[in-house]
Figure 1 (cartoon, rainbow, N blue to C red):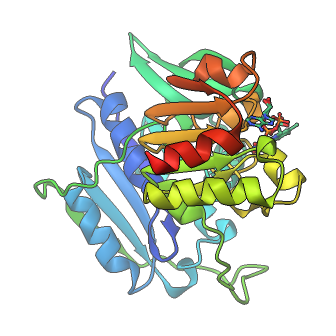
Figure 2 (tube, rainbow, N blue to C red):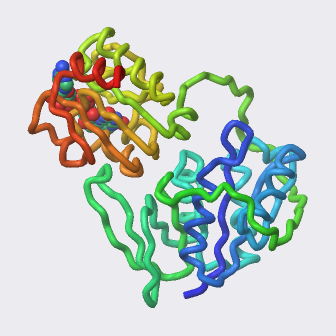
Length: 316
Ligand code: FAD
């Protein structure tokens, strides 16, 4: 099945959202020799972003240029995506499983009456397309065979973005759509430092759980992260005991991360936490309970008290 694919590009902090490049990698597996089209919305500032996508394996970039589109409000985007689907007749429409992607994919599925398969982590090509998706907070992997046309949304970090520029192969088509004043619009965006971006890009994460017990324990995790030139993450357990806020929480309701090394300190390994670290290359767990479930998911385990182990690790 070599179908045409349309990907909806997203921005994060005025840059291309990594999930868009992850979608391109997924699209290459799905489409075979089919055409990969990326749809970019925005104004002057997004032109370079759209142009760059031609060096990232997109066969065509459709750049919808209008000042009303740069804030990516779904009410304005939906009719334009619908028009593109009608004009291009793709086999698959691909979104990232982000707040915007989830919102657009679901609304579009209802609007144009196409099936939606969400939260995809793997694809396999048989005669049809067999996709694996996470359901029930990541507790269950479901395999679904899809027919075309179909809408797919991919879990962030399930594919590895290729950030290296490729040979330019496609072309940029600039379209000037008419966009109605939306019925509500964003008045102001205020930047809040959440640490999410550092977490998403971190190569090393030392994460604190309820087992750190107090601020002294939390500061040992901070020191280890600093020594390893990494970033601090936390579980909900650590947030609940008040040693940190939820900005750096990892898991189902927190961030999804993909570091080379993840050191879980005093974290039990609840599924709602682990779904956020499935893409970590190596998990090291420190826990004083040899039966803690985290050890079943760890590459290395240290059975011990964080107050003894963390200073030793830092020294090493
Ligand atoms: P605990 O489960 O209490 O584990 C603490 C661990 O520390 C224990 O294993 C203990 O043996 C060990 N320990 C204690 N003292 C020491 C010591 N001195 N040295 C070494 N080890 C020690 N959780 C998340 O993290 N992220 C989420 O995004 C998230 N989303 C959720 C969404 C929903 C809908 C629900 C219902 C729950 C969610 N949770 C989430 C909560 C999750 O279920 C767990 O409650 C939470 O992850 C537990 O955090 P913890 O491992 O730090 O604490």
